[in-house]
Image 1 (cartoon, rainbow over the protein chains, first blue to last red):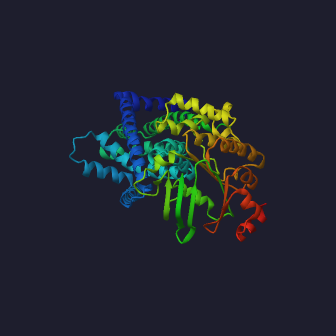
Image 2 (tube, each protein chain N blue to C red):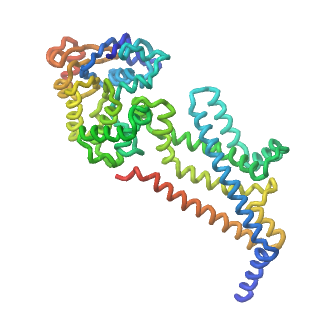
Image 3 (cartoon, chains in turn purple, cyan):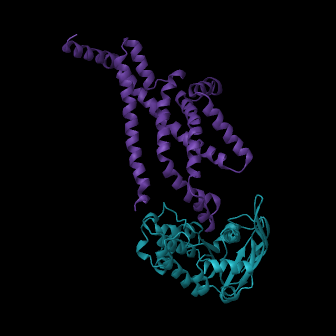
Length: 231
Length: 240
């Protein structure tokens, strides 16, 4: 195959994969689904993670047990299995949109990992900080929200970003419950056109760009958080 | 002002405080001295319940503070504390370190607190550092900010837990000067310290703690001059 033929073939494949039958729209819709599911899951995962972290750090034995079991079970089972159980068993008959069920499943999954990150972050703050807050007359929750958490958040920020990125890529399994995200759209085009190269590379590039944009945004945010480190 | 009756503190099997009775009067500057591990820091930390008391009673202004019903947060507002490791809040600017508690606890408006913070910073000689973060300060400057932070709540008493032990030698003086100034103004202070010269000069009373009990208590002259207590004698002969 000479060079000209190679490029001609490439252009032909490109047209067939993305232009014919407006297949690019599948990918576009897929991007929206991925973003939708990811954003809600990140928000949910952060909230759940924070609550579970407080349970794990609590002196109350009952709360501690809840936190322990939650983290243990979620980390001990595959996310595909969790997604399918939540979709086909727990919310089987519930009148909730598919994408929201998927978000809930990923949020519950991510919460377990986020909780460990937050717990480690809170524990990394010197005990003297809490003592200083309490000695001024602040109560435990005031000390936590105004003194410990802002510092912990700064320390765990990179780890949290990492978890968000993992979560976004993890959503590539939503095809298992019939959602058409980026991955599923690419897969669909592959089947419809009998070509693998174009749709799969397009899928990879789209994920890459999405995550790159997120990373750049988070880097800016981190810079802001680090402004108190200036000597 | 503070009455301590038969105060005991155990860490598991270890008996750190084995029955302390003390009475700290308003306006007193009490220096607590003793070898390391003697329980003097634990004693101080019990006074505002940073350490849970195992047994005994602590009264602040006639209120039993280690009663489960006592509002410890309210009591702590009357008792400032300065730590060995400063414990400034690194994520807040110097001025916000000082105003955080008075504003959160609704003792002052933000404007009042800012004005008061600048006065206090001026008093400790750091007015120009109001808008920097603690990371850019030297140890001595950090400790002076910590003192200003404690003063911002207008406490009746300030507890100092080895305030100069973490400082480079050349910075000890600037912190002690601020504390001397404070003592002169009539502030009630309890100071755990290894600075014997300071204790001799500023204290109205010196307490020597060893093995979890008060071995000796008296004016600096009495304790440093001619103590009868063998342990105190042995300790002082090593440090003086």
